[in-house]
Length: 172
Image (cartoon, rainbow, N blue to C red; front, top):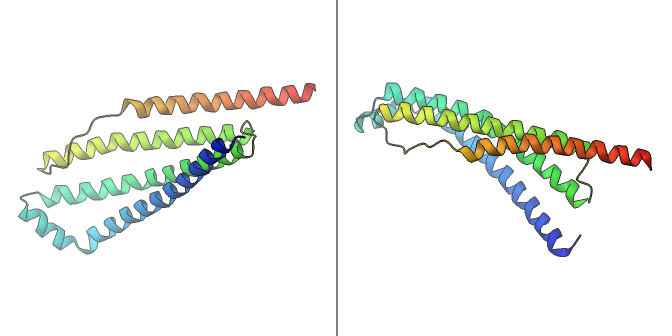
């Protein structure tokens, strides 16, 4: 393996580890927001009322949104962990191992969870917009859905590659 390739893998490992920590921190922040919405509910209601927003719509919608986001953080953590494990096998010089096919399929399922959460975000944004909150627009991401399909296909390619490799090794 060339030095530049080894450096790229090293940077990839570092970025994946940082992303995992950041994802966990964001998940913890979401949990803290959920708890704060109950602890400081009177303050939130007063603030929303001053903004001429309906706290009876905004507050429960935001709580459900946060709850819906928690599985997404878990899926992202699993996805990043599996991707880090794949990078480790590439660094070791042996990426076509049966575990990587399973990891790739797990990553595909995790990405599907992320895409489903993205759809849910569109619903939450629509509800909040109707209640008078202006938090931005939502556009569905076709590229994310294509990535999900691609990952399932790549998982199958890894399965076939490891099967063919095992057959060849058995013949030799």
